Image 1 (spheres, chains in turn blue, purple):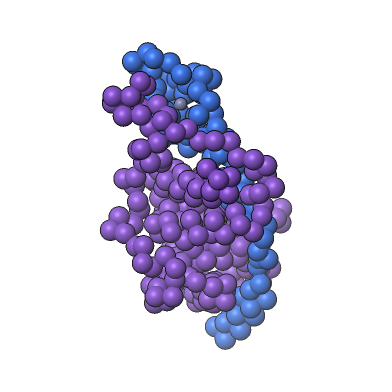
Image 2: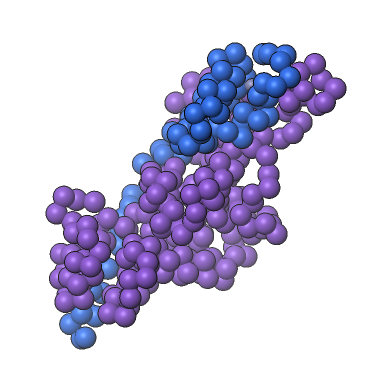
Length: 84
Length: 217
Ligand SMILES: [Zn+2]
């Protein structure tokens, strides 16, 4: 943790995490964010937890058996296109 | 999307109009999963979500001859789905767990990612730095795959403002790119990212509360 007044705070860091992950930070900002990350364990843990959260959300998709409605949609297509 | 799927909108629209079932089936195979997940962001059950998706396909088949191509074909289909799902969700709202938590700010844009009291105040030794930093989660991969964490995530998602829920569903559950999600939901680049940021922050916070309480913190 640094004491320099003009350095990024943790409070600012957590608001930039999505921009960082999405690769949408301007170069100068990215350097600042990475410098903060290098010396702040709390923010490193925070970023890691956001990434774990994303991985956890992705697994929600594995748990459901999609899709079930394919045949119904195709049946509607046949029916409606024939009567057109 | 499969290799054989037709990528060009005009070609695909023409094929569907003339009754080319394979072309339509390609679209159904590509979009049914994301459409169903997005429907589930608004309605209380899988059965209702399936109905909303089916109604959407019927709307597409009926409307394709009049579709003027002002948006992309996929954007148009997602908008049909969203209209169906939102109005169906409104009707069934009383049965939804998150109905009591509806806010005045449906996009939920003015919220911090982390509660302000987690940081040191102006009189702290390091103002704006962590007062209570997050604590690393034990065995996160195994536990995030478990039923308890799954319930925590689903509840957190259900409690999100509508637009945040839609973006999170397409980006993080379905695995859509930012561009695909923006097109499906008709959002600007910035708006998409802000909504995603708020949504992810809240799901993380819910998981943190869950893991911390299991650890007796
Ligand atoms: Zn920090």
